[in-house]
Image (cartoon, rainbow, N blue to C red):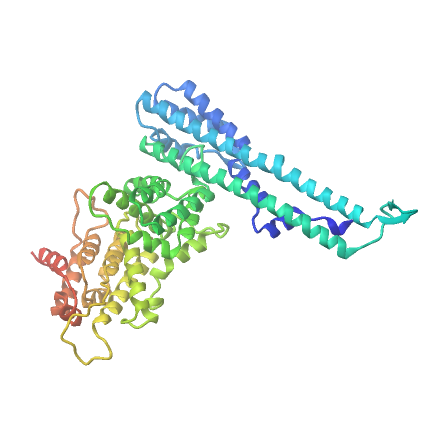
Length: 539
């Protein structure tokens, strides 16, 4: 009877989990057939190579000969050749270690995919078939006619054509077995989820070991580490680590793939300008930032570790994510892709900290808890981008700079409470704005934009009018913009017209360059770095 059946989709809806979909997505992510081809590439390369560089070159050549995966080239040919050649550190022992980790990573991927698929094919599908058959059998049994003839019970069995139609009974039986199937689906989903979680944790550990050996996780024919699913796992695990107190080792661990991506981009920025992220890298970045969200970015930035290895680990995590943010803000690196499903969500994770005259800092009174909470998050975001070396593009560099000025002006209003005409004590519930100066410094990573802004009298007037808790970021921004664009880091040449504009604006600002005002009287202002820089430029 039709009213007794139910589909996989209906079982998943009843269970509120989706084991079949989870298995399909994971199998598509691993793609065992392509994984087998990739494994053969590395096996052949290892047999032909005598050094790590030979191994990398052989893998590149063999992968090119092998064609593409799902219509795309396995590697990018000549453009990747130089990168791939440096993926592996020199030395036979290290080459063996890299080969072993790569092989183990591929094996754990294919083995996990097989186990996940087996849970569906050998458990859940048969159980579903059993429940459907049992529902039919129970309906048949309960709709057969039962009579007593001569004191004995006699059963009359109907054919399917003549059987009485009892929709209410069918619905009752269907609900019973649908619930049983849903219970099985919940069990299968839990088992599959644990298998995949274990796989992702192990793969992340292999990735850390490979990165330690100099292998670029984001390049070459093996792209296990740069799937959106791995990005989501890394960001979710990072949020969990933050919720548990922000253990430095875990923060670094779950940002390692992003750190590897950033290292490669930074090498290109230093030598040949920004490198465009591949589709896989871009979608990894999108998913990571979208999953982490604005609160996650702020929480990571607000983790402070001042001493020892923990400080280094937190610093590397900040640098990885801060540079990831800046890559998203550089459209030459993360090229806008309307087909990327999470790119807009990634931008929404960043935009609250770049929106001018919007958000909790402008929608709440400066003496409110909501304002102070918003400023703490803003400071956390500033801590991240301060550690970045990747420049934003021109438009986003300007957004960073003007947002920094707007927020700095707004937060100084904490020292001007509307309900008092004057007060002679230092407020005890003020949150200092440490983020604006850091945001301004990060905007200066785009030296051309920084120079252009320093030539703008409106911008320099606003910059010198502000009262800064720590002017080091302001001084850094000026330093980044006053050198000629074509001068090298080793032999920097001042752009004298830009310097003249800066000094003229500083002279016009007068005492404001000293940081005088309500914040100076009732709070904390430190313009030492700014004054020292201006004095050195006057010499």
